[in-house]
Length: 313
Image (tube, rainbow, N blue to C red; front, top):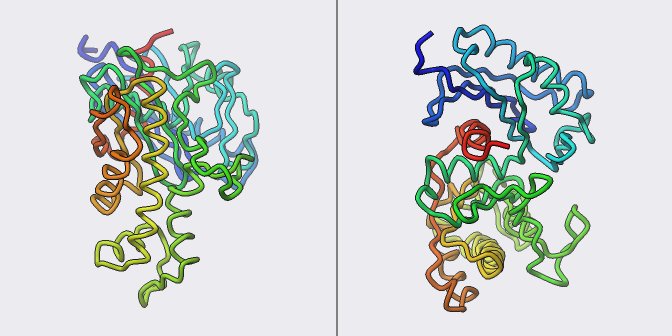
């Protein structure tokens, strides 16, 4: 085999909808890819069976011989120190020993686990919008709100792999109860389902197709609907408060925002930048940039590999 492909990582991106795998080289290029639907309503072994099928397909490639480690980015909560995962949308996995189970089918390759927000952060720092920044916050704003940190030029996952989880910073002290148990969390205001929920509660009416997703609310906001605009502005303020708090605490220089809600474009980013100007007032955070993510749907796989290649343990 060509020496060009002797430093590969087998990357796994595990979510509630799909389980993807790839062989990724040290430039972030994906060479081989496999995917299965996540049997999220089935038991633990059924979900692990889908993971094993993805790995088995990757192993049919001659490039597998160049893999030196496995990187996993998983929906959370995760506990990297214990090697376990408990994805909210995968009912059968609660404290599931994913690192040990994957390790048993990859012939002794080392296995590294991070949360999906940390994986996205690794991808954006390595190949995307945060490249060249030593201190960055990256956010995934989608069904939930997650994130990760780069500090002093290195990925900072924290002891359990959850550092940077901005979605559960409280920004409304007497706000709605969040499923995490706290109140007024960023996620409870700014996630896609909660943007849509707020719009409907304020008597926004969907079009003839009955679509009440955040994407439909974004389209209505872009067309000038005042209730839809207000729902996105409220979400933007919550994100701005969380970003400003994080920047004040650890002095990040850039906030990169990805995920499905970021697809709303300036419907989100214009009020987000405006609100950030109201919250980030101290001299050392006034220059904070907010930009869209660049890595798109491959961020999970590239980031799972990047967590291994950029921060070996």
